[in-house]
Image 1 (cartoon, protein in one colour):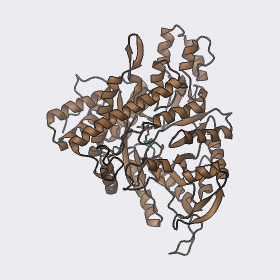
Image 2: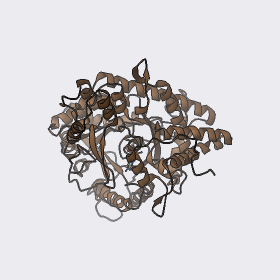
Image 3: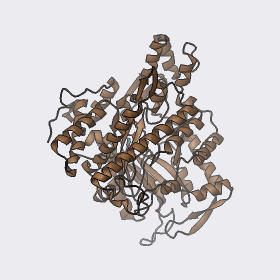
Image 4: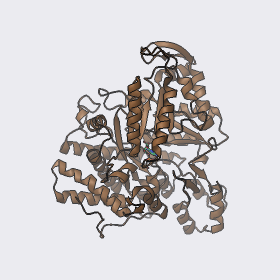
Amino acid sequence: SFQESAPKTWPKAKLTPNARVILEKRYLKQENGKVIETPEDMFYRVANVIAEVEERYGKGKKEVKELAKEFYAMMANLEFMPNSPTLMNAGRDLGQLSACFVLPIEDSMEKIFDAIKFAAIIHKSGGGTGFSFSRLRSKNSTVRSTGGVASGPVSFMKVFNAATEAVKQGGTRRGANMGILRVDHPDIQEFISCKEDNKEITNFNISVGITEEFMKAVKERRDYDLIDPHTGKAVGKLSAPEVFHTIVDHAWRNGEPGIVFLDRLNRDNPTPKIGEIEATNPCGEQPLLPNEACNLGSINLKLLVTEKNGKAVVNWERLSYVTRQAIHFLDNVIDANTYPLPMIEEMVKGNRKVGLGVMGFADMMILLQTSYASEDAVEYAEKIMNFIQTEARLESQRLAEERGTFPNYEGSIYDGVRKLRNATLTTIAPTGTISMICGASSGVEPLFAVAYTKTVMDGTAFVEVNPIFENYAKEYGFDSSELMRKIADKGTVLGFSEVPDWVQAVFVTAQEIDPEWHIRIQAAFQKYTDNAVSKTINFANSATREDIAKAYELAYELNCKGLTVYRDGSRDEQVLSAGTSQ
Ligand code: CDP
């Protein structure tokens, strides 16, 4: 219904060579192995499909065209990017636009294998799936119909894992899963250690679902009850401090399991009458009800710094505009989307959740000459996310006035408080690929390195020197290829006397930052985020188990919804590796 090529007069996308390679590999249309679409055509395709939704709400062709142009500009300028499935699939056969799904697993053979089938369908389209295995009866409990014994959640996770492995080959991207088990499930100890061997259950991230009751028992150094998922009755006891220690020990060894604070997810569940939240998507930032999906998008903060009286400042005016357009865009995605299953469509259209977040926060701090590990950065994080959430709600309210509230509004936490079009608005995604497309630091993470090698899924490696660092080097007179090479080998600028002290402070990298600052930044964003925040808390290789335990306690204290830790060098294969030597 629209021409395929972007009009010549529309702005061109300012993509880095790396970004072009990524787009050509998996995002742009191909025919017989040849790319037949430019990045501009892709943004045009996406903008048109998402803007055309206006027609369903009574808008005319002219308005659709104007909106399409605004959506296009936001993407081509790299100021806003929807999640990968939207870029890949809008206006194409798959038409599946969401990154995040949660599927229920009921305790019967039929339901378990239904979930595996549904996950395969979702993976094929580039979506990731999260599951709670908490409803499955424990290992060795009886199976009435056969008189045999149950094999338990962990053994079924291996079946899900194998299915994902098989689908992986043909999909648009590698299928990702999240597996969650409640800490009071009788099989919790087996679950905590199920990824001890790095080669097992590789297509899953795992997280222990922590309850308030458990945290209380840890604090009081006492036992807590294990609950039979069928009867709801206590069937055993474990020492809470010991289980806590086991989780910490495993996380210290190889970063898994993570933890999620289940009661907190439900405290902020906007539609408690519709269901209970038991799981999140694969990277943990999106808690969802069973059979719910969510589409994400991120604002590139790197581009939202401007100059005022010779000083770098946040461009609030532009941030307001981009936030509003982004929410409009994401709400339209819900209608433009092709859903993999009817029950998912029903759930998504009932709550109309979207997840707008940010990328390039670390870049923004650098441009504002502020260290990520500072009170000022925490303050910026709060101020920016508060602003985005406020603007997002205003836009959702405007859309509600025009199109109606989300259908499950009645009985929701917003009922009688504020009419909104969407049950949730904000989520901080990892932005693993879209941040590379935008040439920005990922999500709210600090720089991983000033120069680094990044390996993407198919094994291609990129060497990158931070472009802002290159600019500063020229501007402040320490630009030498010799120095750049040394920095690239080391990954950091700390200790290079040629580099001014303030530049060293501003280019602080993930592993140099005290975990406390990592967590405080996560907490600052969480404060103004409806859903959750994707964040990895980096530790030096020398960090102790006590350091990890303290981090968990701090995250709990500061109201985070979960925590993922990673100790440098604790896994054989790292996605990101500092320096060019690895
Ligand atoms: O940058 P991009 O939009 O590609 O994705 P992201 O922000 O890194 O990840 C957002 C979500 O997409 C994850 O939390 C997963 O739910 C999903 N995802 C996935 O299913 N498979 C992947 N290989 C990467 C992401």
